[in-house]
Image (cartoon, rainbow over all chains, first blue to last red; front, side, top):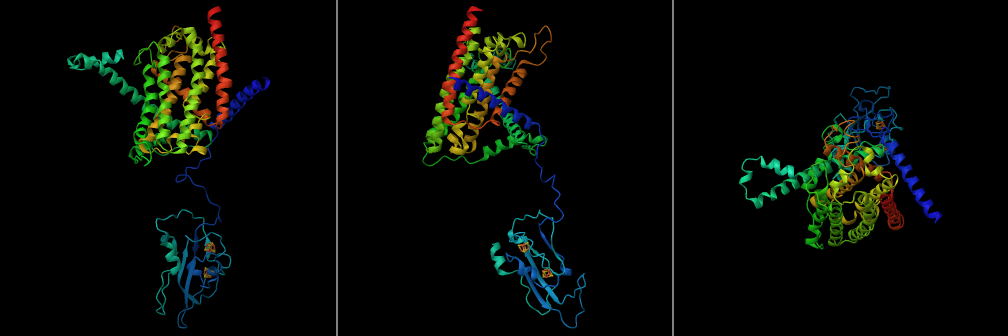
Length: 166
Length: 352
Ligand code: SF4
Ligand code: SF4
C-alpha cells in the first residue's frame, strides 16, 4: 500500500521534472545552423578539396606514389634541350613537362598524405568543401595546362578511374 | 445552426427551395464549415508541433517554406501527400483497407457537432451531448482495428490490438472523471455545462470544490492523451517496435487521413476538456468588471490551443510507457482515483 502511493508520487514528481527540463529547453538558443545562408568559417588548414599550383609542380610523382587510393594521375615528358629553362617559385628547375595532372576527388579520402612529400609545396588542401556535382566524373580536377610536344596522345585520365565513374 | 439558417435565409431564392431540402442545407453548410476550420486547425497544429518539438530539442524546425518560420511547411506536405501514389498491398483486405481511414476520421469529425464553440456557434445542442461525444469517439477504435486487420501485416495488427486495448481501458477513467462535472450540473448537454460556468474564472469547474474537480481534470487529461494515442501512450504506433503501428501500410491521402484524425482527435479532447473544466467560451472575469472583448469562439480556440500545447509539451518530454505500465496506470491508478473523486464530488454536492 505504501509502495503504491510512493510510486504515484514519484511518477508525478518525475513527470513534472521532465516537463520543467523541456520547458527550459524551449527557450534556450537553438544550435541549428541555417546552412546555405549561415556557414561555419572553416579552420585555415582544414583538409578539403585539393589544389595544385601547377606552375610550381616539378612532376616528380611523389604525391601519386604516396596516395593510398591512387587518385592522382600524372603523365610527364622530358623538356627538350633547346627549350628555355623553367623554374618553380622556390628556384627548383622544372625538368619535366607535366601534361596530365588529374586528381579524382571522388576517390580521395582526405588523408593529406600527398601534400607532405611534395618538394615544392605546390600541392595543398584548401578549406573549400562545397563542390558536389551531379556526375561523378565532374569530380576529376584537371590541373595540367601544358600540351605534350612529343606527339604522345594526351590520355584524359587513367582508365581505372574512368570506369569507376560509370 | 440556427444562425446559419438565418444567414442562409438572406440568400436570394433560398425560400423557393422545397422545405424538405431546405432543412438539409444548414446541416451540410455547418459540416463544411467545421471541416474547413478543423483542416486549418490541424495544419496549424502540425506546424506548431514541429516547432515545439524542435525548440524543446534546441533545434529550429521548418524555417524556409513560405517565408516566416516555415509557416507553409504543412501546406507543402499536404500537397505532397495528395500527389503521392495510393498503394493498397496485394494481400490486403481491399475494402476494409480503403474504408478504415475514413472511419477513424469520422469518429473525430462527428464529435465536433456538439462542441459549443461560442454562445450560439454550435451545430446541435444534444441533451446527451457528452454521451454522444464518447460514443462517436469510440468509432475510431473500430477504424483502427480495421486498418490493422486489413493491412495483413503483423505489425499493423499488433498496433490495432494495442490501440483497442488502450482506448477501451482509458475510456473508463475518462468517462468517470467527467462525472465530477456532470454531477454538479446535472446535465450531459455541453451547452448547459458551459453556461453553468459563466461569471468569471472562479466559476470554472476546474476550481470547483478544490481540489476535487481539478483532480478530475488531471485524470481526464491523462486518459484523453491515451485515447488519442499520443506519447507517452503511443504504444499502438510505437515506431521503435512496430514500424508505424496500424498505419504502416498506408500511403498518400489515406495516410494523411490518419494524420488528420490524430490531430483532430487532439483538438476534440482538448475541446471537451475546455468546455467541461475551463469554462468553454466564457470570459476570465465577471462581465461587470471587464466586459468580454474577445469573441467567444476565439477565446474557446485559445484555451483549446493551450491544452494542445500541453499535449505536445508532454509528448516531447516523456518516454513511451510499456504495455504493462500502461494497463497498470489505467486500471490500478486512474480508475480507483476517479471512482473516489466521483464519490467525493457526490457527497459534497449533496451535503454541502
Ligand atoms: S589526400 Fe590522400 S587520398 Fe586524397 S589525393 Fe592526397 S594522398 Fe590521395
Ligand atoms: S609531389 Fe608536388 S611537385 Fe611532385 S608531382 Fe606531386 S604536386 Fe608535383
